Length: 414
Image 1: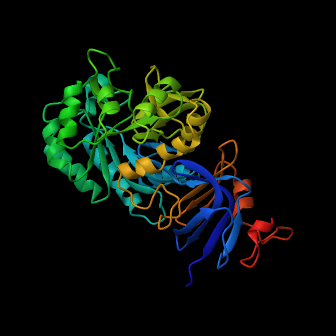
Image 2: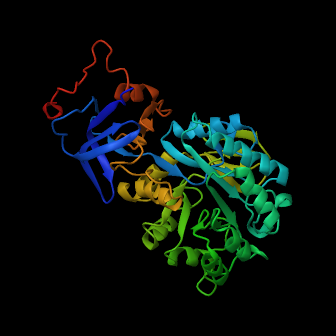
């Protein structure tokens, strides 16, 4: 079977360092060519006019616990698929399924369920597991279950990695715990360690980095604030070029001035994440998922009866839009923080870029940075933000009254 060739034209391409009007061609699930202006002669395949909308790489979320009414760590693979689909349909074309700290048997079951979904070809945007614990500081546990926290333990670590069965794994760990640095050193070849939920000193974070840690989970949140005589993990993250670091981009976890400080300190190391929980996309209300009940009020999720934020209700495209609209970030920077930087941190080759040879994971945004269309591995998916506009852009062009550009048409004449 001949692979379908598509050429997207009249797009504002969001490329490294610039936005450029141009075109992009895909074939067999890959980007095969990209260029400025209009494509030249040759086989363009199916021409897809994007009407001057933004075309950017699919987004990559390193930290997501659920969405669309389903939790990533319930232990039910169907829940994992449902949550991944909710994020996929809003432009997140690669993501980790984040497993919160729950009792050991439940955590192992949750890891297996995420692994099964990663290996399911019907869940193309789920690429690995994020273990948020159980080796976390009780003093900075946030919404994590206190009774399920554990001291660093090689047997538990082996069990969790075995449950993941070879899919990529990120583990959040508090490096000040006894045995944490040794655990990082022993297992750094099998997973990506991230510093988080921690009361560590600056020196303890540096020791963890020397042992192999290379990432920081939701910078500023669940850790001591920056202090000039006790710089702690924030200073380590902002000053050590070996570390990438997450910012929960919902506008509630981290306010705009702090985001600006982080971006200025590490423009190519900042990673926007959702830290989304199951209520993402559901609206305000009280919800019970997995091991917790949350109240969502004005879009902010808190553990019921407390003021503790329990993840976000955002999708990654919302974080990109918030970074631009509320924080004043450049769109190119915001897209990089939600695509190529996390893809690099996770060693996901061919993701998070508009370049020849990259996977054809694409997101189309309008002037308001709202999703118009989503493509995963060269295949259209229904865009949850506006299904009607998605169909108008990527599908149904052969209906009566529609204008269809064939491979013989001159795209520059429109």
